Length: 231
Ligand SMILES: Nc1ncnc2c1ncn2[C@@H]1O[C@H](COP(=O)(O)OP(=O)(O)OP(=O)(O)O)[C@@H](O)[C@H]1O
Image (cartoon, rainbow, N blue to C red; front, side, top):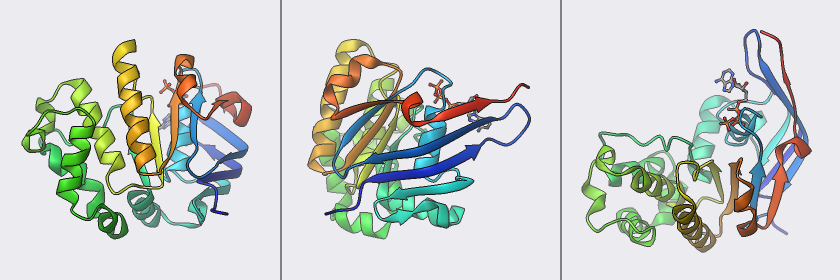
C-alpha cells in the first residue's frame, strides 16, 4: 500500500507577533490520488494550513508528512527543495514572474528539482503540451507573463504546478476571480490534467459549489482549531 499523500498529526503553529493567529490540527490525511476540497471562511486559516503543508512555514510541533517524508524534521532549505520536487503549488495570486516568458515561468520549479525534471523528460515539449491542454493559445510560451489576461495567467500557474507530475497539487482559491462558467471549465481542465499526472489534489476555497467535483469535502473547522489573540 502506498503512503498517504498527506498526513498531519498533532500539528501546532502560531504566526509571530502580538495579536498573532494560531492554529492546531490534531489529524488530517489524504490518500494517494485523492482530491479534497477544503472549505473555510475568509481569514479562517486556510492559507496558513496550506503554508504548513507545503513547508513554506514550519510547524512548532507535530508531524507534517508529505508522501513518506516528515517536513517538520527538515530545515527551511531542505523543505524548499522538497516542495520543488514533490508539490505543485497554485497560489491565490498565481505568483508568476511578470517579466519572464511563459516558458520560463512553467519550467521554473524544475530548476531546483532534478527528479521532477527527469520525469518531465523533454520539459519544453511538456510545457507546450500542458499549455495546449489548458486551452492557452499557440505561441504562448514565448510571451511575457504580464502580457496575458488574468484567466490565461491562471492557466500558466496551473501548468507550472503540473509540470513533471508532482505527487501532490495544492491550490489556494484558484477560481475566486472567475465567473461560474469559466470556473467550471477551469476545474475540468485541472482535474483532467492532475488525473493524468496521477497527482493528489488539495484545493482550498470558500465556495461550496465546487464540492461536486471532488472525492471529498472537508470543512476547515472539522480538522483545525484556531485562536486569534486580541491585538
Ligand atoms: N505572514 C503572516 N504573518 C502574520 N499573520 C498572518 C500571516 N499570514 C496570515 N496571517 C494571519 O493568519 C490568519 C489567517 O489567515 P489565512 O490567510 O490563513 O486565512 P484564509 O482562510 O486563507 O483567508 P482568505 O480566504 O481571506 O485568504 C489571519 O488572521 C491573518 O492575519
